[in-house]
Amino acid sequence: MLLTKPRGDQGEACTRALAHAGFAVFCEQRVGKCLISLAVADARKPDILFIVCPKKAMRVWREQLEEHIKFDWKCQKFIIHYESLCRSAKDRRWWRKRFRTEFKGQKVLLVVDEGHRIKGRGSMQSRMLRSLGKEVDYRLLLTGTPVDKIREDAWAIFDFVHPGALGATWEEFSDAYLKIGKAKGKHGKFYQTILGYRNSKRFRRIFHEYSYRVTLREAQRRAGRRPYLVRRRVVRFDLKPETRRVYNELETQLRTEVRKKKVSTPLVVTLVSKLQQLTGGFLIHTEQKFNRKGLPILTPRGKPKIVRTIIPVGREKLVELFKLVKAYPRHKKLVICVQYRHEIERIGRQMEKLGRSWKRLAGGETFDGRFDTDCILMQIRSGEAVDLARAKTFIMYSWDYSNISHEQAKFRILSFKSRRVNYIYLMANDSVDEQIYEAVRKKRSMTRLVIDKYRRRRSL
Image (cartoon, rainbow, N blue to C red; front, side):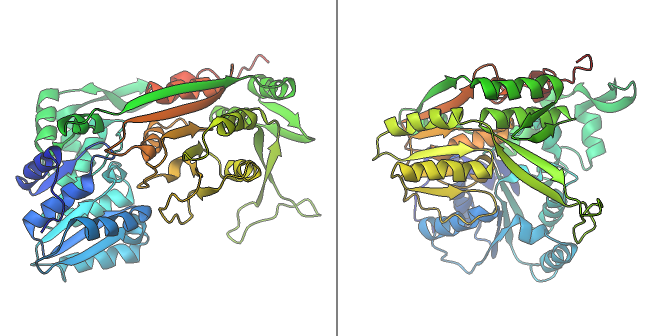
C-alpha cells in the first residue's frame, strides 16, 4: 500500500496510466514521477517490479521505495542501471533469456527512468529496452528532460510504451508522419533529410492518449501554492589585453602561441570549445607523444598516445566568481556549475582559501547525495537524478551548448516547495560565451548562432 498520498496531478497521471498497458510520463523534473510510478505499482500489484535507471538514480529509487510504499503483496524488486543491462552482448543475452524464461507467466511492470535515453532508435539501450518491453505486461516510461526533436524521437519512445501506436516500424512511422526528401549539402551532394511533417492532428491525438505532461509551476498552482519565481542575472567582464590577444588570434587565424606552446584548431567545432576555454582562463592543449627516434608512441590498443596539457591564460572569470562568492552569505548554500573537471579543482582551492567547504559532483565519481558543505561544484552533465534544492543560488561558471544539459543542471536546485531561485551567468564581453548563452536560453540552433559565426576565413 502507498504510505504517501499522491497530489492531484500525480493521481491524475496514475489514473491515466492505469488505462493502458504502456504509458509515458513526461512531467517536468521535481514534480514527483517516482511517486506516480509507485502508485501505478500499488494499483497493478505486479509479481515483478523492474526499474531501469541511471546509475546515480539507484540510491534515489531505493529511498523512494522505502519512503512511499509498503509491499503488502509478494513482489520481486529489481533496480538496474542502464550500463549493467546493456554493457555487453553477454549481459544483453542473459537479461533477455531471463525475461523470456524465468519471468514468463509472471506479471511484470517495467519502469524506465530518464526514458529520453532510448529516443535514438538505433542505440543499444533503445533496442534492448524496446525488446524487453515486448516481453512484459506493463510498461512505464519516465522523463522530465526536454526532447529536442519530439516528432522524430517519438517513434522509439512509443515503440517501447505502446508498440504499433505510431507504426510497427520506423518506415511505417516516417511514411505516415514525416515528409522525407533530399537536400543539397555544402559539397554539392544530396542527402535524405526531414523536410516537414504530416498528419499532425493524428500524431498529437495518439501522443497525448498514451502520455501525461505537467510542469512544475502547473503542479504548484494545482496544489494551491504560488509558482516559483526565477531571478536571472548576467555578470559581464572584460578580458585583459593579453587574453584578448590570444582570443583574437585564435578566432581569426585558428592558431596562437601561449607560454611557448603552439595551439591550433582546424575544425570550427573545436574552435568554439577553445574560445570558450579562453574566457575561463585556460586552454586544453593536446599533442601526440613521440620517442627519441621520432616515432609515435602507441597505446596498448595500437593508437597514438596523446599528452593533454592545461595551459593557464588568465584569471578574469575566476576573479568575478569570487567577488560573487565573497558577497554571498556564509550560512546559505551555493551551487557552482562548470563544464571542465579541472575547473572544479581550481575553484575548490580558492574556496578553501576563503574558509568555505565544498564537495565535487563530477562524471565517473560517486556522490553520496548529501549537501553537507557550503558549496557543491558540479560538472554540468553530472547532475542527473541529484537533489541540490538546499541551495537557492546557482552560478553558471561555464556551460556547453546543449539545451538538455542546461535545463537538467538548472533544475538541480528546484523542488516542489521552491519559491524563488537565482541563476547567475558569468560571461566575457564580446566572446563566444554570448552565443552559447543565446543558444541554450532561446533553444536556438547551435550551428546558426555559433558555428556559422566562426567559419574558417580562408582569406586570412
